[in-house]
Structure formats: structure tokens, C-alpha cells
Amino acid sequence: MAERVLRGNRIKSRLRAPKATDERRVCIQSDCETVLSRYNKREFCFAHAPVQVPRLRGRVTSEA
Image (cartoon, rainbow, N blue to C red; front, top):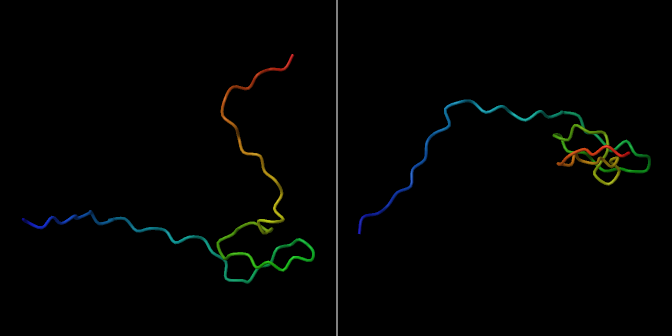
């Protein structure tokens, strides 16, 4: 039996590096010492982040 080889295509374009900060950042909530990731652009850690409601799909009905 002949061996089967799976070959892919090379990525020809250059990939962008993710935006990162060099400084060590901590959650701004008082009494929280959670170190934030270099790639986290927010000011709060996950436990203290304000709740954000995502956009829901569907029709917007007028309430009469």
C-alpha cells in the first residue's frame, strides 16, 4: 500500500502580532491584587468587571 501524505498550503501573508503592554498591571478594584494579562486591555479582572449584556438577535418590538 502506498503511503498517503497530507500536505497543506503555506500562509503567504504576515500575521500581525497581538497588542500587548510591557508594564505590569493590576485590577483597579480596591483590595484586589489580581495581575492582568499583557493582552487584556481592560482595567478590571474578570471577577470585578462590570456586567455587559450582549446584543440579542431578533426583532425589536414596540411596547404599546
